[in-house]
Image 1 (tube, each protein chain N blue to C red):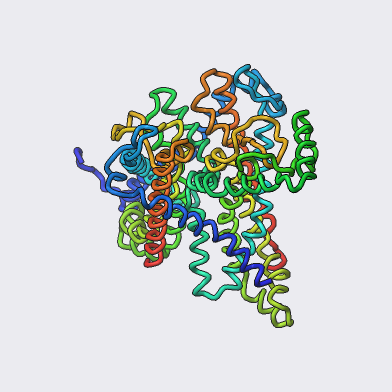
Image 2: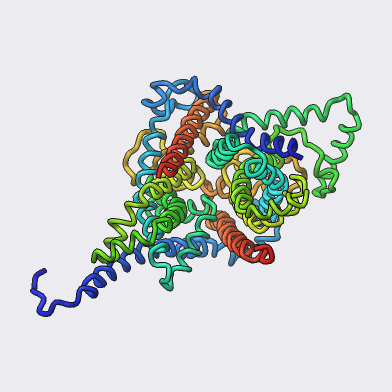
Length: 336
Length: 262
């Protein structure tokens, strides 16, 4: 210190001075978190503005996305994002809950821990590695399956395909034709759904496992004392009790699925046309960002792609908040 | 019912085993000295390695950690040690929300912040990765700091230490194991991210340690190789994927060991 202190302040306020400096420092550094959020919002907003102001609400409803003549309607890729995410969710939730029940309720301890750990490792595999595997391993299987479907031994299938090809060409969809395979290379909407299912499984599974483990022992013991079977205990006592937490996990997994990028971008076929078949090429908002942002030269194209990111930003924030609210609201108060 | 549940569990775990052995079969052959010491061969030629990607990944992860760990640990300290501060709920909420924002959107943000002004650079990539690390580090730091018994803090304060010294010299060291675990998990998570690097770090066929220039990374080379038409590039991608998941698995394993030993 340069000048000597005339009056020595009481010890408590001496330490509170340095405490205040430290608190401000920590607060300043922690505030960077909020800053990152605000700057993200601002940048995405500013860069989306040209597209949003010029195209308006049609951006969300128009079904043509054509950088060549400058038409940007995101309806097809919004549909692609919704279809892939919800389909993956519907397939993965029962599997995830079952595996959580296995780890938490059925497996002996020596098996439960390694299996739980393997499921965690599944979440650690990078998106791009999933994409590589889907491309080299699953796509050929699907392609072979599609060729088998069009085996000349089954002329009625060929006829069905020809009929659907006509419907597809006329830009209409019927539910039946949606499920008829195209004679493709295995890539497309279906493969994206398969790989997304695998990718979001570990998130739901580990949340569900944690919540199921939190169910108090009394819950089970009371049911067993009444003579319930294991499955009755699970379906009447454990699952209802864990419902809120599992819902939260499911919604967090939905958030993952909506924003999942590279694995989907690698396998979905990158077509911005209206989705006509489960087996056809499609795209999601995230896959379009990955595939087009680097090449987008014109302002409107570039801004339209950023707008997709802006939508994803809002959707993921909303989904996250929803998960929090659900976890708080659905917690069964009567049982506690 | 039990059989069905066992079957479902096998279905869940199967992809992990299938992916691992597929990469082992296809990629192990390409992992040799060249793989670690050479850059990729020109398209259509054989040979080469992924030195550019390995050095790029290490450089960007190191830079991302400086940013992500500093902000992340500070955020965790703030949430755990000043729970009654009026800004605490906001920072907690924003940190949680940030964890759910897709990596590619964070790439767009880093693009707007850095690339628009200074061009593609390793620094822009590292910033995007740092953004992604923050919420993971905040969460784990907060959780382990809360595990440090209140009595330990009180003991420090009763010795006459100011609160900040108690935090820095007593609470943080007591929680160091858990915090390191969190940092390792965050690193393992962002080490595999390619999406936010596509238009920030961009990729580089040569070894580059200058963060102001485009830089390659393992996930980027895997992406380029996997979508390439050339067998040799695909082979490199599989070898790179094998290296990447082995590194990630080992890091997760170590992090788990580390946190259990505490």
